[in-house]
Image (cartoon, rainbow, N blue to C red; front, side, top):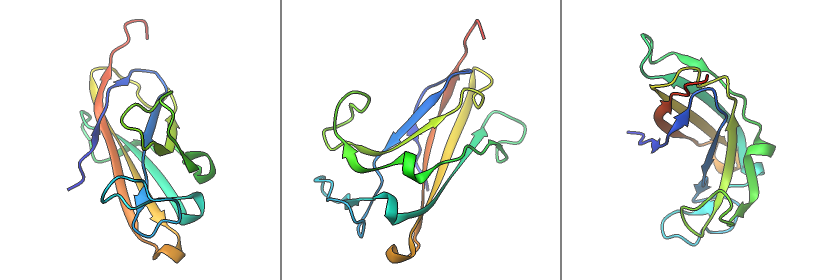
Length: 142
């Protein structure tokens, strides 16, 4: 079962998803955290797709948006360990993706953002998933 990261979105606002993408055979440095493997680099990944679901709609399994993910923009070859936007730990993140303000169109609804990451052939073309899920806060002036 895929356990999503719990988040809070805002209605009609841009959202940024951050994460640490690792694999046992990644070509980046070891994260330094036991059991996580090595950071993935841009060349390690052949595709990343994104789908957004409105879990409170009549069709919660139908994507309401499919934001494009550009590997060269979303994957950092050197992890960011500053605490400017990542405050979870000191090991940092290497995945960053902005979702447009046109995606979370209604407040007081639960949205789920799912990513599918396909590794390059050199890493066995493995596929894995990540998800972020939470309520969109209503914006009264929106």
